[in-house]
Length: 199
Image 1: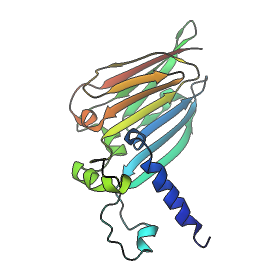
Image 2 (image 1 turned 180 degrees about the vertical axis):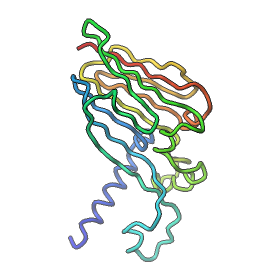
Image 3 (image 1 turned 90 degrees about the horizontal axis):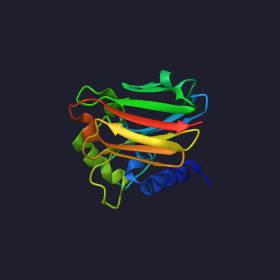
């Protein structure tokens, strides 16, 4: 194939098109028993210039664009990890019971929602057709997913300061919190997500 990168771009577009919108903007943490682990993020970004496929194409009037920026890294201690102003506290509560507390600030001054979704409502609406050509999605980046895979099965998962639209679930070792962007950007007390597991 003369241009193998074209195939990679097409595969990426097809993969994103098949994703649930909650997979588009996400923070995923995989935790080890020593409370170290890995973190991956996917965030929206406003393109500053035409991408390679646009620059090297003819016959199309490009109308909507958005970049999805993905990153992966490692950490030695979850309590030392901070993503913008989103913070974590983790430790042992005794008798082999471990806990995580995730503190998510809210309001116009909250940094973490804007770090993941730096687009305005109008920009997100305009860019939606670039992610979902079916037209079913009217605005991308309207929800943010936080997913934590624990070393053992989740014992409890609960949210304090819960507001309309947030959803906390768990299955086996994986706990998930889905937060509407509007909720994160609305003034109010910080939300705190509590998780426990037994070593």
